Length: 117
Image 1: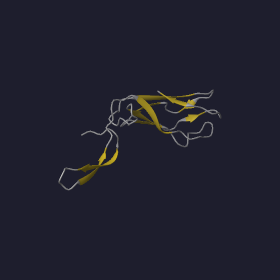
Image 2: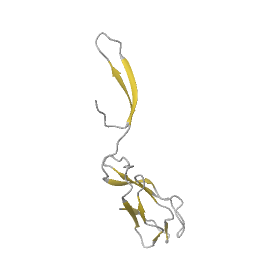
Image 3: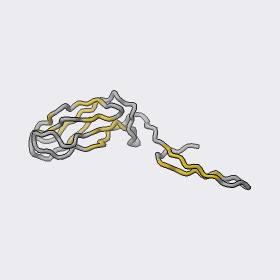
Image 4: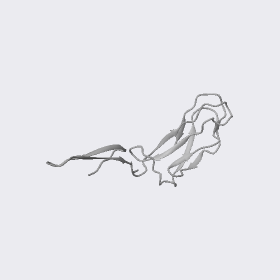
């Protein structure tokens, strides 16, 4: 018996002439190999030159989007579009599958896109 989706399911066992029984269980997702990055916490808007109020978090994920919590070796770099300068530590190592940024800021008042690689 196998099941590939992470959720709570109920199994019902039946046999001819016997009383049926049920069993509930939670199926946990097991992460596969690292395949992509996924933003799990987006940066919040901030005043030009000030640290973002909410700093981004980026997960190392398998092809199904499950965080690879065993990964503490992937290095994630962030870059910003626009004509200003992205400040702070732009390179972070993943810890338990997540690269957590702190102190990121942007020097100019304009709309930007952060790209993680």
